[in-house]
Amino acid sequence: MQAVNYSYARNNLKLLISQACAQDEECIITSKNNQNVVLMPLNRYNEIKEDIRKSFQEIKDNDLFSIDETFDQVSVKYED
Image (tube, rainbow, N blue to C red):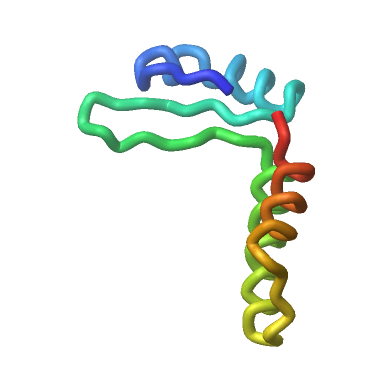
């Protein structure tokens, strides 16, 4: 994951989008007023969103794991 400032991102947006999609990784775009954002491939965003949706449903259904089981599952899925 890389971090770039707003000016660099503005001048190199096409390149940053291409890199994020090709490498399937996020890019942090920083600003002077601490309004920072993350640029990521849409498929990655959708995966995370779906994981969160499923997690909320599991909580509603009381289908829970121990903290160790949860950590193991998350570690495998989101390893760098």
